[in-house]
Image 1 (spheres, helix red, strand yellow):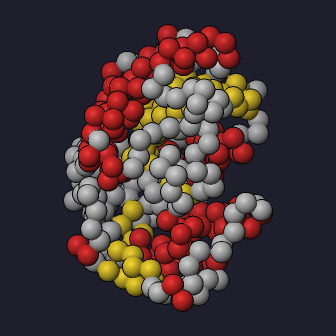
Image 2 (cartoon, rainbow, N blue to C red; image 1 turned 30 degrees about the vertical axis):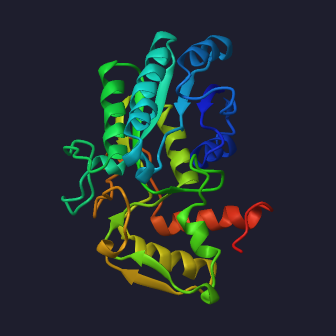
Length: 291
């Protein structure tokens, strides 16, 4: 049985890891006790807990707020990640951290592979890319996993409900939901991501991987399918991206290829299957309903 020290265990991905890694002993201190920025506490926790793997599921990922607080973005997403990777290396512990599709600018118009040149458009994307480079520079036993549009149960660090949950909580009396139709991504159910990473940590092939639910989809088509599967009577209105105002620039096409992950023997479900799995978790939990 692997012993795992998990940072960010109350978030959407952290919650999925705690729920789904049943064959591991997962130790997930609350944020007040251990945050990714607290390098001294982290080193102490590594000495006390003696894990096999350190997983960082924490981040400053409010994309628009990162534009006004870039120093904080780089402190959490880059500097603190480097120190965590260094602490894991010095303790002879494998390290896992997560990055984002926002390291790309969206001009490729086909799913990005790990070897494609990054070009972030936002402070958030730049801070996550810096974290990737800093981890790589340490030459540690580390997995850097890029993902996209993660949704699941559990709180986000920004205390926001997932897009899909907000959509399903509406009905026609609330008016239409306006969703961009010309932005393509790889929305990923947190449970699917947790399962993939569980398989990854059993491999000695450290490095950079993409892990997303398969096939590119526009956010509009994703919203329509989510409403259809849930049986929710909500109007979804397609809008062009230039009508959706936000502080940070987003790539128009940021779908990720999982070919490298598949070559390691780990398959990701489709985004439609991800929606179905997510709806199943809502239906089975008294704390999460569609209304």
